[in-house]
Amino acid sequence: MPSSLDDRLVHTSKLLSRAAKSLAVVRSLNWSATVRERFFSRGAAELPRVTYRPADHSSVHEAVAEARRRLRGDQPELAWLRRQARAIDLTASLLESVGTRRFFKLSKELYGVPSDPLLDGKSTSIDLARRIDRTLSRLGAADLGSEPEPRTAAQVATSIRRAVEELLGDDAPVVELTSKKVGAKASASTARIRVRRDAKFEKQDIQQLVMHEAMVHVATSINAKRQKQLPILRVKHAGVTRTQEGLAVFSELMSGSLGPARLRELATRALAIQASIDGADFMELYRFHLERTGDPGRAFEASRRIVRGGLLTGGAPFTKDGVYLDGMVRVHNFMSALVSLRRADLLPLLFCGKLDLEDIPALALLRERGLVAPPVHMPPWAQDRRFIVSYLTYSGFLNRIQMARVREHYAEVLRRCPKLR
Image 1 (cartoon, rainbow, N blue to C red):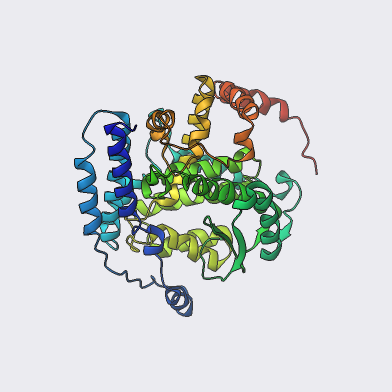
Image 2: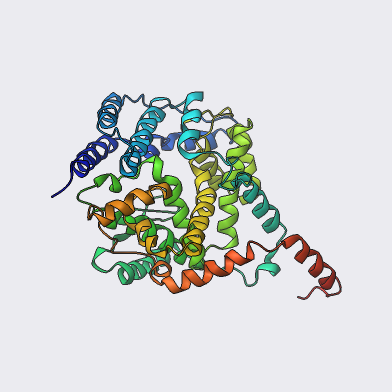
């Protein structure tokens, strides 16, 4: 029989999951198509004009208050649900403050900012972004090998369809082409993966999208449907975004599909967020992205992602796009810790639903009591525990090497080498 504690957890999880259903953050911050049309019809020379529909999420705040009354206690499982309640409450407040400076304050609490320190207390994702940008900007086509192989959206959709059917079987979502009104090149849910019809793709994008969208976002959503007792694990609220996106980018890395263009794109997002925090307005962000991409449409979309919901005049961005790099580093460090501490048994928990790394201790306790169902689907690299143990053992040793001395040695050695064609 379930304990009194388990009854409280199950009941409160259901209460919070119902409350969070109305909090569709990205959809709530969308701009109408006329904003883009007007911007370019006026020569891309002035700030866009954006209005947001006022939100009232008082019912969400009431549900969270009721949940908190039921979550008093010192147990890790109660602390886990209190974190979910806090994130849901903050998300409701975020959507109630669109178009104001308070929006940025709440976004910072939910998603962080690129200057936030990582667990070592000194490294930051903005440091990583600057390093990536500095290194990759110096590389030319000759340094990167053969030219990328272009693919049409139809070819990409066909290849993704084959891959997800093989990897997910009967749970595979429908893969379809969609209109250019969708901002991202691809998006996913448990029912379908949408590939934007007018987007430009390379061959490497296929594996990247399969690993990121299908084998993390879709797979964890499918696994979450099995969480009958704790449906909060099905909810993609802001409190789990850093880990979910970090896990998805880490999956790209582990599958060999995180190419330089993609990596620099993620770095650029962090750089743009920091620029906006420092005062850059939409037009400055647009010119920054236009210089990098040479594509006005992409520059508009990348800039829109940064300022949506906040202030177009600068100083108050939407910081969600910073979680990709930050989350990848945190997931990588967590995976390394699992291996070095001989706790690879916990790896499957990362895929049982929508969760944060800090939730793992509570979920392990709940898994042991049968309240959390094990995942059905995981990426191939996560299923082969031997591979990830070998990789992370090796990379853990590399992290201890003083690369400055190594670089100095090889700089002298390579100085005598002619540049080869």
